[in-house]
Image (cartoon, rainbow, N blue to C red; front, side, top):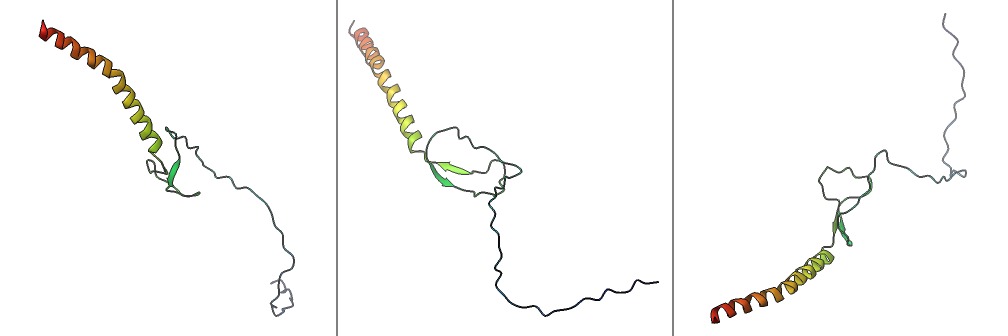
Length: 101
């Protein structure tokens, strides 16, 4: 024996503006994240990914402006050269002394 069907009232839908709404503030945390710690200091000059992108291992995420690093290398090279000049001068004087004796 089948149960008797339930009677329902059918109405035509109406178009209207919804007056009742709610706003909620929330934070979403990713399931997996990573903290970036560049090996050098400097300003970021380009960002190659955006939040939420999946990235492959080894793929560049950002570029750091090399100006600061180049200046540091040039400064240290100049310091090495400057430190070596007195020795080079002494070496030349020693060779010149040997040639005259």
